[in-house]
Amino acid sequence: MTTLTPPPPAPPTEPGPPALTPGGRSALRALVVIAAVVLVGGSVIALSLSAVGLSRFRVIADEQSLPADLRALVIDTAEVPAAVTLTTDRDATEPRVSMRMVNSVRSGEQALAIAQNGRTATVTVSGETAGFMRWSRTGQITVTLPPALARDISITVRQDAGVLLAQADVDELIAHGTDGAVILSGDARRIEVHNENGSVVTREPISVTESFTAETVDGDMVVDFADAAPRTIEATTNNGDVALELPASGPYLVRTDSASESTVTVPQTTDPKRAVAEVTARSDDGSVTVSPLTGGDHRRHP
Image 1: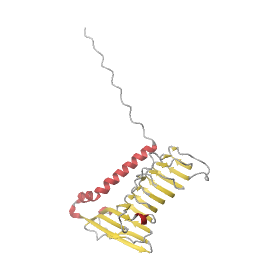
Image 2: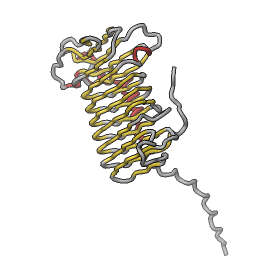
Image 3: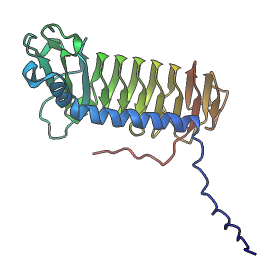
């Protein structure tokens, strides 16, 4: 008689990864957005040239100085899809704006146009686009400011399509976008963001002293605050999650409204006089999370 030996028991399986919280899902999506921006920023010109053929496109580069006594700056890209970067350079002797753009050979000459009214400058992209829809030109616009000037300046950015990367310490930042993410870092007295299709995220905790207002129609809101939270915070989205991280001190007066769930783990108060900040967070079709800042202040300062 042959005796069959039963097979050895299966080795224990490793437990699966824990399910992501709503804030974790939002943070993951934000990281994906940032990674995509980095890839797009480095390859948009090469991809545009190779998609249709080198003979039908040209690369345009332009750089101009901005007024030295600047106190307000407006960047208006209109229908030109462009990534706008705001940055500072301690070695900069004057404020300047530069552009690299892919353009159809059938389009007229394009260049940066700067209009000055007192201590306010408005930067646009001049020239008409011929055929091939609006995607016949696309590129990147970079504003570089001396740090001392940047801290006293108010910047307004208007984009129909494109990503805004705000990496400078400024007095005030106002952003209006239709299609594209807004990615924030640095310090400001006041920040105001109005977006339609795109997320609003921070690459690192930001410091805002007075007020922070951000709204988007279709996108996540993932914003971390360092140091002390601004006196008022308003973060709303129609389709997406809201995840806010605040300094752990508090207490905060928090008002939330969401379609699925709201989780608040920061110290709270119902007395506006005791609150160090008033926070309003709303998602019409997503979750809301307001939690203490984790990992400390890991901003990269020069």
